[in-house]
Length: 371
Image 1 (cartoon, helix red, strand yellow):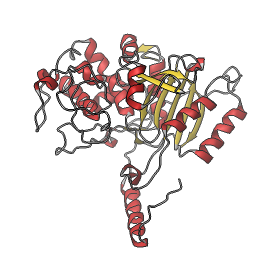
Image 2 (cartoon, rainbow, N blue to C red):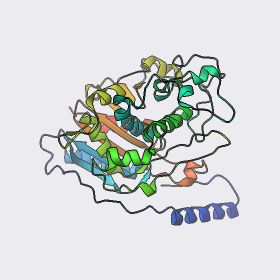
Image 3 (cartoon, rainbow, N blue to C red):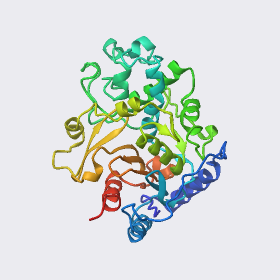
């Protein structure tokens, strides 16, 4: 990664470099709790629709043009391609939300969580107070970011351009990507389940899927109570463990012949709730945009990928800086992609990461069927 510091005196540059050294030294991760199980690898490319030349071109592209730190491509449930340090445990950014939606399934289906219950009935409140109309938002509204609660969250993901005046819309009427909703979604799961999100993730996913790099000690939330009572539940896992989540989704909740998450729930969370037109309106897209999305329950659904048939029915978890779990049902492919951005990039002091546009172009150029 080529860092370029903003024009500042030399002494300030030295100071920032010392911060980098300190952060790199202090940000160690705990060793895996258990060995887990590895994916089988393709022994030959025969029948995969990929060639060695194409995969070599992908490697050169990642090295020369992107800041990718880890990438895994699964084809038919086996590793087709891997790049970088796929064992490195790092920040998944907003992929955490898609992972959370998976965890909701069993609680919704056994009646522990009622999607029609209001956040007021659950006891969601803020120090600055919630309006009565805001308290009428349901869990369902929270899970597709249409609660109508326009409060600032403890972290980023606050779309100021599309935020409206508080109390101006009825819950369910207006979609805006706001981490307040997503952080509250985490709080609701913990209130209803009686467990931490990380305990649930370990029990529902890490253990049954055989995560190889999981340690609950690596998980940590972000708090800023001056903004909100509800922390961001950041999730730190490796690229190869992200790929397992993607394969579980592709398998419609089944793993090694056992139904880990119900097929009905997988289908529900990957069915559009917020239509493509609304997403285009929020973010300046239109019918001619090369990449278009709708939104389900914390998953982004790909509705148009340059009109290529391979991408029909595809969907993705996506996180700032280049964190992705993308599933292609038509071709039986899963892509897990990581960019371990530095703390200074997260703080906005340096530029870095892999942009969404670069990632989508990568998929189009190297993942689609050739010919």
